[in-house]
Picture 1 (cartoon, helix red, strand yellow):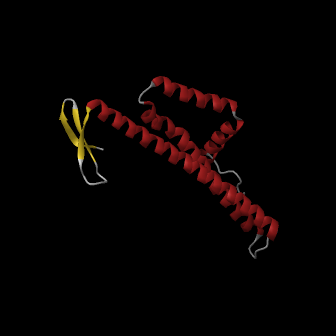
Picture 2: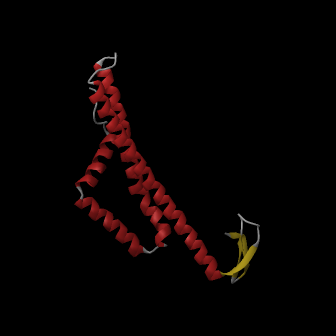
Picture 3: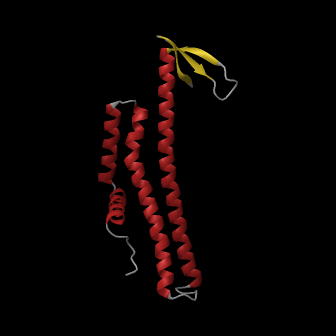
Length: 166
């Protein structure tokens, strides 16, 4: 990485090896700029990948939870435990509700934060930013699932949780 404020002259920078033997080398201003832009690009890509990984993990938890609840119901029936049936069903609904809310929240975080992260990738290229936002809008308009996710997240976050026990 470029050594702190190690600008040696108007056209020269010092590149430090912080992980290795601590040696440094001089690079020109254009190379230093390209290196910094590449670093910002990689950081932004990693942040988007982490957001997507969170959505994927929440989806896997949701599917696993649905499978577990269905399997428990199939193997043990409505009320295999000694607790009242309302309590047993309520606990299953709570597990499903929690994973649905986690998935929808992760999805919203990805949608809300990706444009800011893309700024590091597009380097301020407004045409690319505009095209990304247009593609999201087209996908939203064309996909019932996209709109359902958004509406369900809004309802769960701002109004009431579905699958109520009442």
